[in-house]
Amino acid sequence: MKRDASHNLAGSLWMIASMAGFAVEDAFLKSAASHVPVGQVMLIMGIAGTIAFAALAVWQGQSPVPADLFRRTMIIRSVFEVAGRLFYALAVALTPISTASAILQATPLVVVLGAAYLFGEKVGVWRWALIGAGFAGVMIIIRPGAEGFDALSWLAVLGLLGFAGRDLATRAAAPSLSMAQLGVAGFAVLAASGGLLILSSGGLAWPSGLAWAQIAATTLFGLLGYGALTQAMRTGQVSAVTPFRYSRLLFAMGLGITVFGERPDPATILGSLIIVGCGVVLLSQSRRA
Image (cartoon, rainbow, N blue to C red; front, side, top):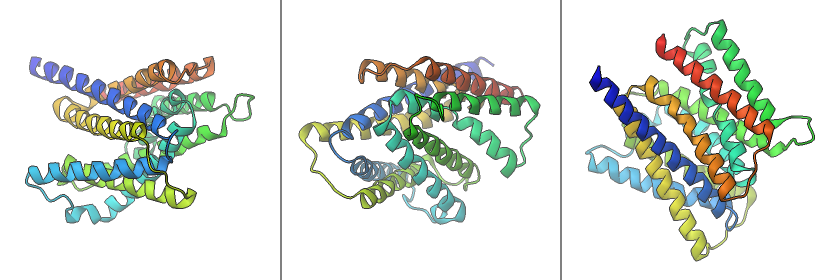
């Protein structure tokens, strides 16, 4: 029991470190996107990340691009990941980082909903109520039809749907795929997403020295966050470490306030509390079950 507790504590700390890394990655992405097109940032990040994880796979004695990556499930996963990364990157670049991150926290709720339909997982009345309340929190943040409504916030909703589809497809992916191989697939998809955005919007810009530094920092913290996430999932029990994913929202709001001068309004704070509260209770119920 003590061994499990110590592993869960270590895994939780790794998860918090991972979420901090991803929040810092978002902040640098937002900063870099003010100097060069966001699609170009994604393309450079994707290429660098693909090379890094391919090297890791080779170092571990694995094929960077195994045949399992081209199975139907992985193709579906890649399509959803393109949507998730593309729309969420646009949301981070064009909307307050605290708002985009708050909406993203509803992803586990969508995953539970999708698992009920796709995998036949049982979802009782209380879980349905929590999922509904979580979505109500998203609507409070977006405020469709209200004076403070920002249509660009729907980009974050499309991003969370893409990430939820990716997570559901990952559940059905071949278990033989390692984290390094999934990393190759994920960052290759990020590069493809950037390429699609460049083709649709047009135009490239040679980054300044500052922009190159911001892109490099974005890539570095993205890799560190991914690595810490992998370590978290391997160290502690999934049900024990997953709730700490919500720490990302705290980091994102802190960076939004201190770096970008954002001031989350009461509706955003209320919606965030509802989403996080519903998610934590939902995950706690899953753990007890």
